[in-house]
Image (cartoon, rainbow, N blue to C red; front, top):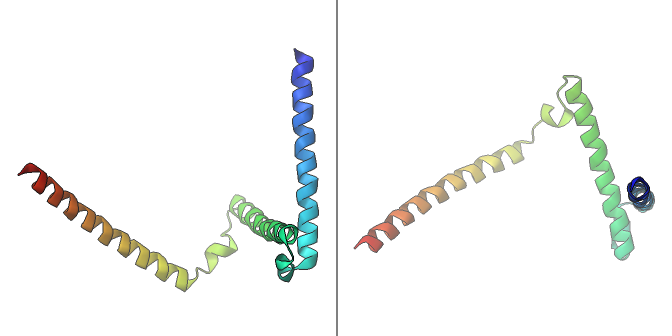
Length: 114
């Protein structure tokens, strides 16, 4: 039984190591080709996407480290005014939609009750 469990975890670890090496290779190829290389076929697209995800991962790590130190992450220091305006507009639309939904529910209840 113990051998089976150890064999399972060894296979699991080997699978993840292999996948990690494949992803790292894709990231390297994507970084070398740059964003222009993403149009070179399915493999090139995956490589470019992996490189972009790697960049975002590094940003996330930096933010988490900053939070752990009690510092404000860089993304929180300068909010994008366009994004803030968009959030406001979406919030206003959500409120209007909820109001319309409430009115429609009342109409349906009224019509169903008669």
